Image 1 (cartoon, one colour):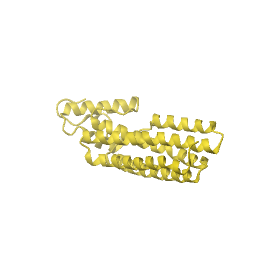
Image 2 (cartoon, one colour):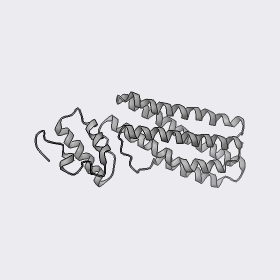
Image 3 (cartoon, helix red, strand yellow):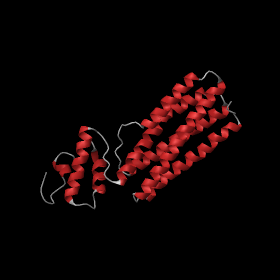
Image 4 (cartoon, one colour):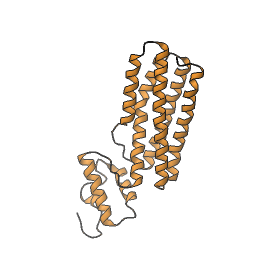
Length: 216
């Protein structure tokens, strides 16, 4: 480590453009510590390097970091849901439920595109960790469907499970939007609010499905 106000440790210790984290990480570091002293800059860079190299874990120092962490969880959760929603649509008996699940699949794809654009614009490093809540809800749904022995219970079980997933996503998008606003990321918060509004609309449509396919 160099003394005084010399060049950042990033280039002197190997975390330059050739490092696996690439330009996005360095841009992120520069923005994150732009208004902090050089000593703080070196400390944050060292912390990022240590966590990435040893654990590949996210580093949460500021509220903005928490927003970025949550945004990655939302993104991976949507990706995890893709093939499963398609399978659930195939398993559904009610034509109305099939259509609604197909619509939900398309909505999830839209959210993936929105979140991907957000991650790219904010220079956020996407790490390969799953959304453990979504994973648990998917596992529970798949298991529940194997227990259902009639068309009515299959549709009812799917509707109940998808509503649970929808409620979780709605709360997560709203909570992340609120945190983004607190972190001064008001423009970015709009993305999460829009996704939450989409989930709210889908929630109302799912709840309204009982008018077409009563749950016995």
